[in-house]
Length: 409
Ligand code: ADP
Ligand code: ASP
Ligand code: MG
Image (cartoon, rainbow, N blue to C red; front, side):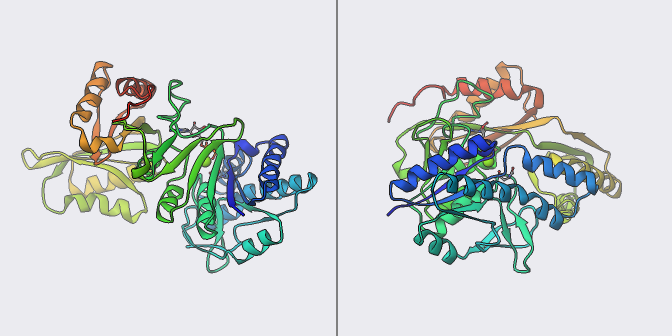
């Protein structure tokens, strides 16, 4: 008997009709003799609605209460799906993350899963029930409700699949797989039959929100067979796989982008040892994650220092940097929250020179100025003005011929 974890995202459970369609799909899979665990997201728009309410109630919402609030979205959907399953004669039972003991650390709004007690899940499956679990949430050792960060239901699904050694974890969403880039930005984007964990991890961490980063990390680490497919359209979707079994031999597999970044520069900083830590130390102490960093070559004893942060942290980082600027006797702070990061990703990059040059030339031909560059073994990222996002993605998609099937080497 095969064990499947199915996860349905917000759009897939966005109305009672859609929840009923999900119930039919799950019942069919169970009728074929499979044991089914279903993880659900909040109905589309619900998490955002709850977050907005929190900000109306408290200017800087308490994170413990925020988790108590936003975890309710998923709880609603799980109960409704369980009812819809029972309605069509399929035995089902819903649980919150806390009830199935998804134990996490206590970092509210971005908690990490520590362990899952699979006893209850297994007992319920053995008794013939479909087990419906509210995604995105857990409980810490003190009994507080926690949430796993935006998009966290993907991670709930993969973690349960790992704990139960499920045959496959199927992420049902509003696209029929992982594409060469977000099909909302480039309609010519092509669905990939397979993508490696490594590439998917880069794509996710560089902004492709089709899977939460942690879900990909978990799946890679615990060897979970992970597939992304559509709730609305039949098809095999995209399998996330290990490199050996990858058939396609493209140089570049995909283009990711991130609209959530903002850039800060401090100019005229004395070019002395310890300056980087004097600038970034207070930023780190304020729990602000820094992404890209550039320090220019010093001239006449002074240098410029630029870094990017999440847009949510922009105002806080700017205020801190103004104070740092004064303390260091630096010249001024320049800030810009109208930037985006565009990245090309591919394991093929390892063995091919000239990819960076193609990227830079393509952007130059479109008149797009590159403000920052960062590279690693399988990715190149650039920061450009926000207004060029679509143009940059489409031009790069065409330059690397991502709309065409790669030839096998
Ligand atoms: P869900 O609510 O089901 O979790 P998400 O909105 O989190 O769905 O993720 C699906 C969305 O991810 C798609 O609608 C698509 O716009 C976006 N997306 C971004 N990059 C990609 C990509 N490379 N391939 C497919 N979808 C992508
Ligand atoms: N509902 C949560 C969110 O919108 C979690 C999820 O959908 O995965 O981020
Ligand atoms: Mg999602």
